[in-house]
Amino acid sequence: PDFARLEQKLKFSEEREQAAQKDVETWKLLSRSQETELKGKQDEVVALRGEAEQARRQSGMLEEEAAKLRQQAQASEAQVQELSREVMDLQGSLGKLAVEVERAQLVAQEATSRTDEEVQRARREAEGARIGAEEWERRYNRVVQDHGLTITELGTIKMRHETLEKEA
Image 1 (cartoon, rainbow, N blue to C red):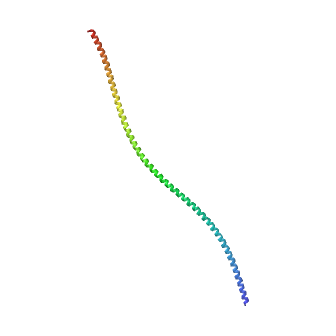
Image 2 (image 1 turned 135 degrees about the vertical axis):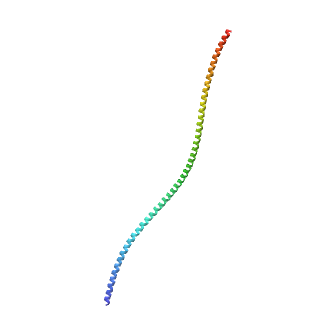
Image 3 (image 1 turned 30 degrees about the vertical axis):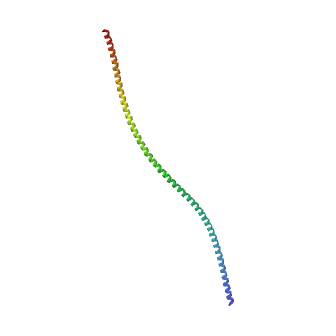
């Protein structure tokens, strides 16, 4: 009886050993599978770390570029403000010049008007002087004519007088 029991125990032990052996094989396969998976995950982690580092570098470069762009934007804004001030100054100057041009035009119009009036007055005076000169010329011609007649009459009277003196 003990032998059968021992055989049974031995068989049971052998079965357990075989089961344990199978379990060891299963665990080895599982372990290898886990190691392969772990190796894959480690490779993936290394790749992700590389990508993260590259992303950090790229992010740093983008931050630098963004800072430069902000500085350029600020400089452009300052330039726009300066140009706006210049435009306002120029508009103010233009307004002043427009007022000065308007004044100059008024002065020119007044001067033109005065000049026109003076030209008209000078023309009237010249016309009056021409008419006066013509009148004086007629008078002079009349006086010269009268003087000529007087000289002729005087000559006639003189001849008559000499004739009368000779006769007397």
